Length: 224
Image 1: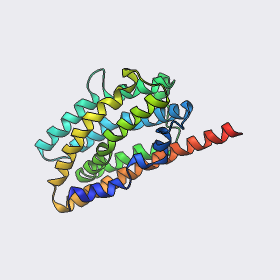
Image 2 (image 1 turned 30 degrees about the vertical axis):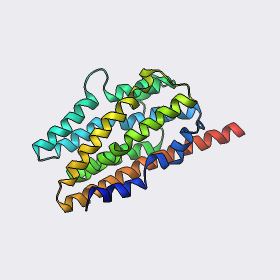
Image 3 (image 1 turned 135 degrees about the horizontal axis):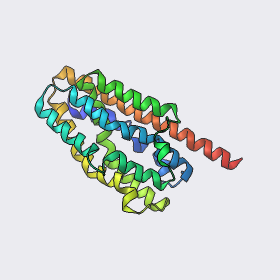
């Protein structure tokens, strides 16, 4: 197995192919829908450093752990940690501080977070595969989101867009690191990494299914 096999499978589940992000990039989403999205997706962003921490803990190779530690530090350290950067984006759409601590509104959000924790807890290979499924597509998704936000939703300030601008560059590098880690695994572990990557990609896709339902319901209410 090569990393190309995993990439080909993941391309079929690339989030920019999902109707929700396509609606985003056509300016078809309401501000209320984007507020729900920002509030719900925060749960995944806030959990992401803990996913990384579990993958790091499950890794027996110190050199690989050092790579993962660098990623974890970027996610969690300082005032501009990535969950806080996401909050800046969410605040732009009217999400209040107390709402970040509320339980998820959508079942798909809970499934996304719980599902990722299950994957990273299973073993190192499945965890690194799930991480790769997310980080490989994040730069393109982030760039596309910025374009849509600027063009259709009048979001142009640096503070509101910083989560996405940071991830355009950071996850391009991190996805390359993940690909190299997977490529060095024994073949049976590469198979597990592929399984983790597919499962992670499906969880992300299903979350957007839930958000698409929010959008569709909102459109029906407007028409009525």
